[in-house]
Image 1 (cartoon, helix red, strand yellow):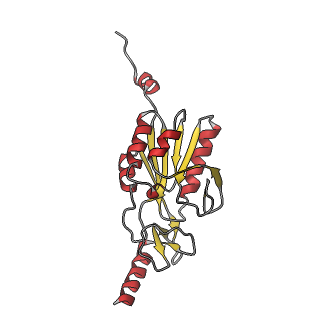
Image 2 (cartoon, rainbow, N blue to C red):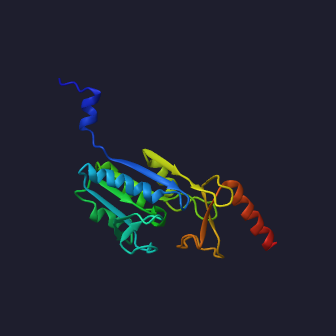
Length: 200
């Protein structure tokens, strides 16, 4: 009977995994996603990056970070579409995952179970400070979760809230610095208290 050492098992197992990069707006999530993809490309791995078709803030096709770092991507309308394009790929990256339907969780698990490294980036909270879309479930099933932080524009502390500066109750409202600003917990609570007092 052949015995396998731990090293043998590691070599024969599929290397599929899920990595989640989350945080507020302006925290560097997309920059980190692109950095990991470029390292994978340098290692001669086959990579593909997807983004929701509704996100056309900087480009209809490319994934673009706030500091204008760009990488070519495939826009898709539904999470199921990712499976159609992900064959023969070693690394699948998904940007702005909070905008996808709940099916994105199953898609990521299927990809990882098939030996694919899946890197997901997205907002973990919406402008009300509530869990955003499928992000909590993605964080729960991931092997690795990286929490990114921006800098609070009010006090300079680490920020993890995306404060909306325009009047709208829609959960999904595409925008950049003209509609959002990163705040720490203390400054975010102050803005909410002020807003509530104005409505009183």
